[in-house]
Amino acid sequence: MGQIKLNQVTKSFGDVQVIPPLDLTIEDGEFTVFVGPSGCGKSTLLRLIAGLEDITSGHIDIDGSDATNVPPAKRGLAMVFQSYALYPHMSVRKNIAFPMKMAGVPEDEQKRRIDAAAKALNLTDYIDRKPGQLSGGQRQRVAIGRAIVREPSAFLFDEPLSNLDAALRVGMRLEISELHKRLATTMIYVTHDQVEAMTMADKIVVLRAGFIEQVGSPLELYHTPRNEFVAGFIGSPKMNLIKGTEAQKHGAATIGIRPEHTDVSKTEGMWKGRVGVAEHLGSDTFIHVHDTGLETGPDDLFTVRITGDIQAKHGDDIYLTPQLDKLHKFDAQGLRVD
Amino acid sequence: MATQHSRSAARIMMAPAVVLLLGWMLIPLIMTLIFSFKKYLPMRGGDLGWVGFENYVRFVSSSAFWPSVSATLIIVGGVLAITIVFGILLAILLNQPMWGQGVVRILVIAPFFVMPTVSALVWKNMFMDPTNGLFAHLWRFFGAEPVSWLSEASLPSIVLIVSWQWLPFATLILLTAIQSLDSEQLEAAEMDGAPPLKRFAFITLPHLSRAVTIVLLIQTIFLLAIFAEIFVTTGGAFGTRTLTYLIFQRVLESQNIGLGSAGGVYAIILANIVAIFLMRIVGKNLDA
Ligand SMILES: Nc1ncnc2c1ncn2[C@@H]1O[C@H](COP(=O)(O)OP(=O)(O)OP(=O)(O)O)[C@@H](O)[C@H]1O
Ligand SMILES: [Mg+2]
Image (cartoon, rainbow over all chains, first blue to last red; front, top):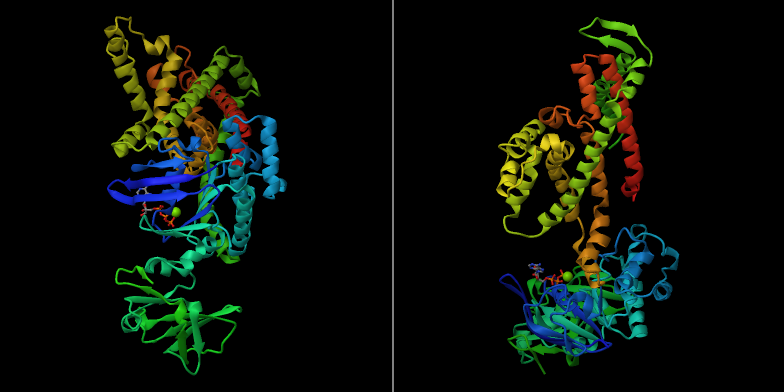
């Protein structure tokens, strides 16, 4: 069990309201990801759920019972911190055993769970080392191990992979997804990494300045962003947002077209521009096109993504044609119109 | 940047300081060693020649020797225990966000800036004086007979005075150590179900062990040599004669430099034994 329900939850630090009234339901077994720009309140929201911060008003239900004033230890949630927060003077084994020791789990049961967690997380060889003698990825796994053995009703992760290098991050991402599939326990995961959000989530919650901009599955957010903010935030490279006359032609204040939904030609097309930087990734190429005459912002910059390679040199003329069925339209308030 | 050239230049520039410090340490040490093997009585004939180990034997066989060692250890041990226990408590208290934190912190540090002689005199005359002291008034207020602290409870009184002086030092070091504790560790422990006292025992205290080690070592070195506090309060009477004070009496009151020097050599040995002993116990903490 692990259903978490926030009802009109707010949080203020002094006079500053960081979380305006917010409603959110996280279903049992769901992998929910909070994304949003830095400072939008993701960590604060997670800490409110964990009980590490007191909520200013509203209430939180966990598994149908009011947990608003329940202390963190009694909420049955386990948290994995960005800094791992391992206990430096304890061995890996003692670190993992700590929550069970506090809960008074019998010794042999402790041992059984530690061995199972160590095996699942590939920690058996390091079990008697201190955290200082482990690599970043190993420390992360110890932190996850410490969370697992508590058998919590939900896991909370606050940017757990942001201190790892790119390759390790991909590996750990898979391990956490794997873990979720195996345990089928509710997980709430904070990140500002697009890829983590899209690949891991059952449900993404996009936050801006404490407001929930949209809640939905990764593909829902990708295909039908509710407003301009979500449209610009989900997807990499970012969606091109075009204002002005070009948008009016489509009867909208702003139109959006994703870089991967634009065809490129060197001879003919709907819009003409000049090649700026071309980023060759091998499998795809990102071309930053300048002076398109589209009101996209400074320099009328437009980004396209094409699969494979194209011979495009800096300064070349280039033609762009949007796939009109993939066009997103937004009104003057930035809300999606269909 | 450590090229051959810059390294040899650094050596040359450091040499005067090294030579000066070495001389500073070695000359008194060697002179003490030389005097300890001589019968040297400045007012009664001066240098009366070599006597071998006679001074060493006389110093330890004197009835004042063992009591002075025990007085030294009691004072050092008592002050260490008090300053560390209360230092940790005060550091935790000062780390809480509270009104007037800055002022309170300065007040707590203040005793450290008072000269030992002055603070001992203040304690002796303003607090512990059996007729006019604050404690005497307090005792009389409750209808009790005032205690003449420095004669009836002389060792605890001196421990109290010295602890008062050294508590700020311990508090300061422990406070900086507490401030360096990652708050996420405490939060993790809180989520893991550890109540406040267990968080203190399992997280804060181990984190402080290194700072405690440092406080122990530094204070021991200074406490073995306390002198002014005893000189201005009891003058070494009522069982407060420490090893340092005994040496002072041998050299200046009995005018026996040879005997005092032998005592000095014993003090050096004692200090080293204590130091090695402490390093052993706590050394594990330093390289962890
Ligand atoms: N203890 C605090 N006191 C005052 N303001 C705070 C406190 N903690 C957070 N804030 C403010 O609340 C806002 C949200 O902070 P939060 O840490 O939740 O952001 P975040 O979304 O996690 O950002 P990031 O992605 O950078 O971690 C920020 O504007 C921050 O300045
Ligand atoms: Mg954060």
